[in-house]
Length: 464
Image 1 (cartoon, rainbow, N blue to C red):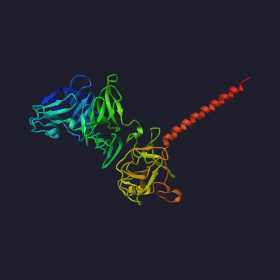
Image 2: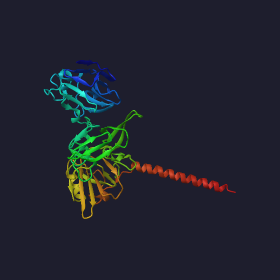
Image 3: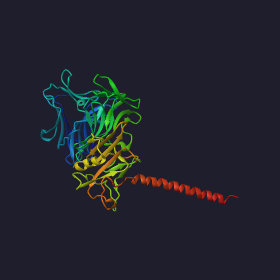
Image 4: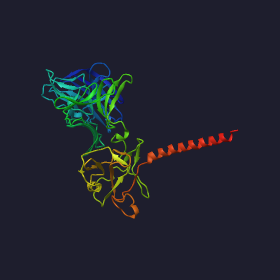
């Protein structure tokens, strides 16, 4: 079966052929506009499950992205994209986007001149049909219904109800072309973790660990909870939904990095979160711009240095990249802040000065976190190094953490006419936003008291 579709400019959804199976020899082609149109989406739905909304559907999609047109095979639950062939690597093409299930059983996306941009890799394995299961799992099966390929084996940023993910599997957010930063939800041997990935650096910002040092073999999303199992197939922990409606999927937020469990609300005609791992703005890893601080008021404030000229680091992302040693850079401490990002400690049981020097001598380090924890019998000092200044938030003074930032040599004025290193570090001002709010509140209280006193004076003057 061959289907050719002409896609016109605009937002277009086409139902070319909707069933639960397509067989070898099937082709569907979408023509691509000759001129680029920002926001354009052309889509042909080829498979769907039952008609009960929201149901699962499979589509071939042409989308305008990065001044080009991408071609992908997608699976939707209602209007939510739950799987895409273009999640990890986009296929850009011109003229046409074609999906073909070849005579040899290989599912392929092709562009102009038969150029293959994505394939299932199942040629010669006896595949006869492409089928969409009621669970949302898109499969390639042979004549006796053995599964040769399935989307459940290639998770993206969504985990569907009924789906299992084994240990060392991860979900990842989309990676944009102009950034190397992305989020991941990882199943480790003893915990599940949310991480921020930036180049070669990785930082966790949320963890869930079963009690009693349990190992994790796999997790499964049921209609009521995300369940965690050990090697004996025993459930050792779960994250429960806070709603009675059945869960439909788990998703890693591509924008926020938050993890959520979602159900379908008939009242609101859409999916709603019944659980979120992070509930505060300042707990999100990229809540503020580089060199920004999330304050007690859940707003972002710039890191500002006390100098004769003043100054802000908010618009200077990468200011310390490639700076090594005391001749090029220096370390300043941010008072009353910490970072929610954690990696593997670079060093333990070292001094704050030594931690600062580790960052100073590392060309890729732009910040460090020093933690001094007092235990019953001993002190534990940890030093974390960072390749970016993100995930920084305000905390109460007197905490056990010290956040250290690398800046170019001579960025701030020397105190008392000379540099005194770690002994007299410059103070960092972070209260721009909070200070303004406090000023408004105090001004309001002052105005209220003045008006009340004036009213009392007038009442006293008219008393017989």
